[in-house]
Image (cartoon, rainbow, N blue to C red; front, top):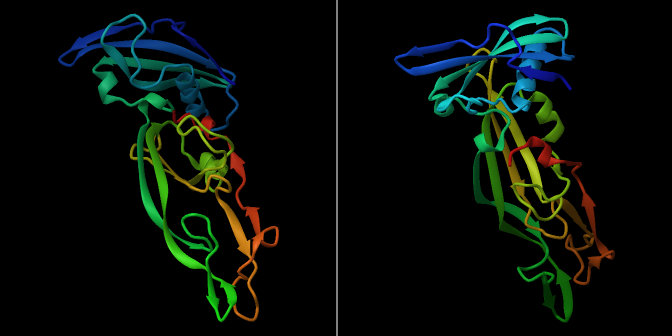
Length: 256
């Protein structure tokens, strides 16, 4: 992991005053970069952010000025020199990166169609005809809670998307302590309007309300003569559950 030293660059403590207020600049040296090409700049900026210097954070000694921009001044091998510009009002015009405080969260619910073989109380669906019982299935609209998060980040989210989309929560996570595997990450999408300097990244998740088998699939035996499940199927005798999704630690996304 790259190391960051702040306020150690000679000449990086100027102060300016204009119609918008005060502006102060701090210097930072980032060492131990491992990325290649242009990716080193993003790695250097991210190292500063991970060190607690996110956009919108307050200056350590100057009141009412906030980090407005992070600039890469020079790169040499595994070392980069950056400038951190703090401005009056920077805390409201800038947005923090990769921090829960700057993540916008939305929660709601929607109805999804699901094939079921039990009623709302867990009783098997079945019908009796001339003393013979027959099982059945039905299409039901069931509630599914959705959660979305959005924030500005320094890097494109393609690696995150590959690691988290299509996976379920390995355990209860900070945004929703509870049943392991209940949340499925359905998308991570980023867009940039400043030449890929920053990315507006959105995350979406859906929660399965089945507390016992969230995001598992149920296979029910079907009688080849009737095309319906027998009336006496039970788990282990005509009903089996299977896990379909791998897990991931959603806490590592640092959304809360």
